[in-house]
Length: 76
Length: 214
Image (cartoon, chains in turn red, blue):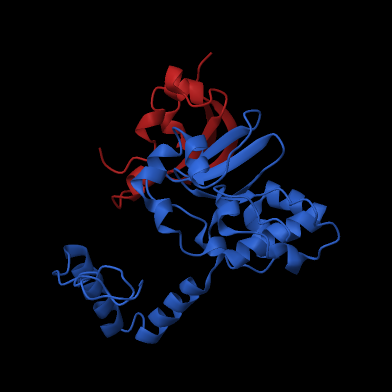
């Protein structure tokens, strides 16, 4: 899997951008000493209902995480 | 009698089991660290004194730094606004050496309670809070806080009303987070030093609240 900064529990889930965080050298390349172009990083908010479905402890509580644009896909 | 030890062969004088010595070989990475450090010293890149000073500086960081920040935000509305806008800049304003740290302060209110975790490793705002507690790095805290934060907080002694929204912040990349807890009631007119004494480490991680005035 390598050095991945997008936790498995968030993959494939729908969230909303809470705020842009700026651009940082891509840690997934930096970790291997490869050239690491700056990538846009976002704070993305997910509801517990979206992450855990019926087993959510309290559906409207949230998790905010930092995700690079390579891991994000726009929904229209 | 509590201190009558005749038949406690395996207990220390304080009635605790003896901890075994760590007579194990160095790991690969421990050997690599020693080799690299010795090479850097031998080549004159750094000195043992410089390394010792850096360790001292790291050990000297404590939650008192974060507490001073919080107490100022409680008493200075303009500073609080700056802290919530750009916590790195606000920390530098207070004279804290935070290096390249990108800090975000999240505010607890009557409606929202924030709690910090790093599910992937153990990211922690060390410059403002010192070394993280062991539980912060445990698999249980890291995995459970994003799934059942209310249960985790309950185990820390914190029960939140159902109406309060819990916001978990997973430090997955380049940011570090500090919680700005709500100012305790009954502290009107207190100065910053006195307020700072109420600000606990856990209240800045979100696993606790500030102490209440006695």
